[in-house]
Length: 338
Image (cartoon, rainbow, N blue to C red):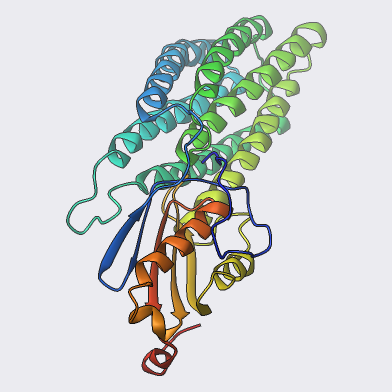
C-alpha cells in the first residue's frame, strides 16, 4: 500500500520507522470501537481494473495456446509443448486470480470476519504449486529427449515461438498495468512473464536447429524454462507462505513498532504485540498497552487511543489495529502474555 505524508503523533517520539502511511483504521480497547482516519492514498488500479487486465491476458493466452498445441504435436517439438503446458498453467492461473478477486470483494459477514480476502493469497500459493508441478513434468521429458533426441521441425518452432513472444508481450503489458502489489496479480504476472522468457528461449532453439541441425537445443530450451519456473514458484510460495503463516510484514521491525508505542505519553508497557498480514496491502496489528491508572478515571482513554493510532499510522503502514488498554495490576490476571 502506498505511503502517504503523515506527521508523527503528539507524544510519539520513537525512532524513525517505516515510511509514513495514512489509512482509515479501526482500533479498540475492550469492547469500545473507535474509528480514525489517516492521510490519503496514491492512486492504484482497483479490483475492477485488475479484473479487466487479467481478462484481456486470459483471452490472448487461451487463443494462442490452442494453436500452439496443434503445431507442437505436428512438429514434435517438446519446447513448444512445454511452452503450451506452461501457457495452460498461465490460463488457469489467471482464471483462478479472477475468481479470487471476486471472492476477496465479498464483504465480511458471519464467521468470515475479514471476508474472503485471503482467497487472493491462496490463489498465489496455488500458482506457485502449479509452476512446480509443470516444471517437474517438463524436466522428466526434457532429460529423456536429451538422451534420445527426436527430429524437430525447426521452422515451425521459429514461427510459433515468434508469435508466442508477441502474444506474451501483449499479455505481460496488460498485466503490468494491474496492481502488482497484490500477491494474487503478481502470481498471474509471474506466470506470463516466465512464459515470455520461455518463448524467447524456444525461438533461439529453433534458430539453432535450423542452422546447425542440433535438435538437443529444443530440450535445453525446455530446461531453461524449467529454471525460470522454479524461481517464480519459490518466490510465490515464499511470499504467500509468510502471509498464511501470519509472519510480520516483510521489512517491519517489531521492536521498532514497540519502541514507537512505548514512546507515546502515558504508556508504560506493551505486550502481546502481534503483527500479521490478512492479504496483500492489509497489515494488521494487535497489542496490550499498559497505561497510567489515571487514564481510566479522567476520561483520557479515548484520546490515548487516538495518540496510539496516530503514532502507528504516522510511522508504519498498518491498515487495521486493535489495542487493549489495561492497568499495570491487570498483568497478574493474564496468562500466556509476551
